[in-house]
Image 1 (cartoon, rainbow, N blue to C red):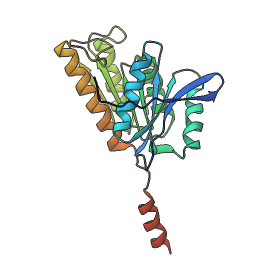
Image 2 (cartoon, rainbow, N blue to C red):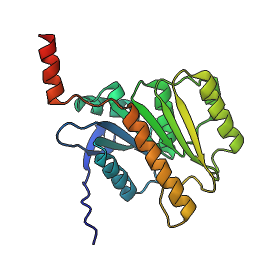
Image 3 (tube, rainbow, N blue to C red):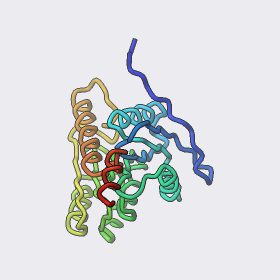
Length: 221
């Protein structure tokens, strides 16, 4: 029997029929991560990712990618007093493509896309990023060819002053992030998760603790 205690996310209505799942943490959380998903991401996987981020001290808001969702999650983040670079985004599948669009349109702490499939020509036409973006892809994924991945990397490198990185895992497909007993897939999923966490923790600005706020007030007076 597993002794791991999982937090059950709460359901939250965001408006326009969009229902999100949310994990709020006590004390002083490190930041908020918006998890953008699609229909291929099972509920159990969503809960597992949210709990893994909670281990890192990060609150989460999981929502299916779709039109207008970025505005809704930004409004919900503000209710929880999370703003700008205190917010990170992790997208999976279609959510990863939407996450890249958020990195182009919004100033956040960090964005990670797991198996994105953007319109490369559209990115080449408008490659500037406002938020650091990490893209993780499987080499055998059907959505982007090796040539398209190279074009995407070059476009972001040349067209944006904001840091971006594209990592391609050989021998795996778009679902590489789902751990399996296969050694290659397991290694790719493990490395991808470590990179995701490091990208977020290095860039998402932590909320000040009560002691830090008290110190700031003393300095101001």
